[in-house]
Image (cartoon, rainbow, N blue to C red; front, side):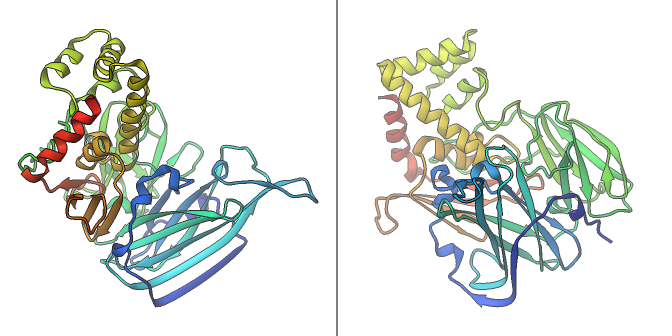
Length: 419
């Protein structure tokens, strides 16, 4: 028996249309999905989460933020109103042409103009164990006349994975991100009301940054022995309120047999944004020499050391300011898009994104992601292929397929940051 928490979340809609059965559409793998990594092409983050409620159904939760919607003044009532359509398509994956289920709702708001709040809508989807699926979720703002889309994988090949848990904040609102700042209270809801305990493993590790793309492929072997372990009681499927009191990541499991579970991360206050001078120096490893980097690490005045590096590199304060803005904007985007069990800027996709910027084309398939800088038909275009890693702590871990042929383009682009 699974625990259904839908009742605790607000869900209001004006019109809903539901269709089941197979329809045909073009494969998602054939579409350029670069807009997923372009904040200026998406007016909202479209926070979403899937929670498995039974062996044959799951619940999709989607947050609509009022502050991201465009409000227009009604000439008759004087009220500022928003209007939007929220919809999804369920398929078997990026390479599938069959739409298994689709649903949409139309809604609006006239009470929360200018407020930094939102509403959570929920849909029941037909997802059967032990299959996996793909959700295409779209929010269309009628006043803005544009939409935002995200893709969410439905992983139902296990009954102990991250989608068998919900995380709530102190106001009993759903937490959509898997990183929680220190001091913030939360509770966990499981899909098993008869569960007595959750087993927690805490890992506090210093992970190396990603290696350049031309180096030899080498997959690190992770030491699964945690730094500490403990248990937390669960009553009627819910834990008590708790906090992450140490940096690192916490892995919550229903038993000690399976490695699958829910992982929550505590990086630093304000993550994924850069909020302290110390966070400025580490990402510079990608464009500094060993001597320069060691000098930065030894400098007691972190901000002065970082500023000196950029001024010496750029040669003029104006260009230094532009480079700083561009570089650290890429770092923050990498944290937002690619964070897994380590900060996004440290990952394989993060290093490519920071150095080369946003790709021109992004194609996704089952367990793969390809980035292209240039035109797909052009043989001189740069191509980077990433392969999904089976990682019990995250579903966002991708490894770059490295090659010596990528060496020249790497050094040319790194040098462009230093001219």
